[in-house]
Image (cartoon, rainbow, N blue to C red):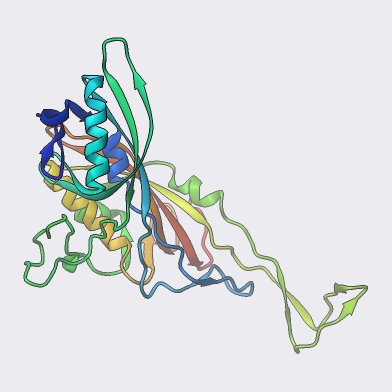
Length: 298
């Protein structure tokens, strides 16, 4: 018996197939956000972004399966092609709705073992939206999406991340933010009149030079430890659900003296341990949209 089922069929029993180590990282990496509409006014800090209704984008996944007997490869591939779209379940609690895209390649060993590399698409990503009507606020829906009724609110601190989601920030976020601090450079007219000389805009007393801060991308490396896979799933999806709610999040970090107004862009899982005390390490990519005057604290 394997930890992986496709359309409720245990692929270990049916095809002698197993999801290769590392596949769970690919599956758990959260879908990216569709790029929101934005204006980048040079006279103000950051971006003006429409975050009234953020939506996740579809994504493509590359998964590898190990087959003990290469003679089973054709049957397994035909099974995926005929199913076309299916539900992949891992262990007792994780599920994804995927679509077969293509066979990307294979590796064959002398002992007859085969590695199949397959591309899938997730057309409707897990969102972590509030459970359907009829479910209790903290009851998982069919696909494992979780309500965040008790975790609403745009402000996130390291304390909130730890207490509500079991997440600890790893070193490196200060450097990630510091390396992206840049200034916009532009001119603002005081009276609406422009002076052009030899085809160039010439500043004079009628103009003021404005230096506003650019919006920037930054990364947060996170570590989540849980009591069980079910607990890990609940905490991880609850955090991701919080991040993709409408409007910006306000991030308050220990070594940054002013809050950072930002929004979620993507999440890449780097490590998953699904033993007795499961844990995971992942990297959140966020985008700042406005900053007050702030500095890196010593």
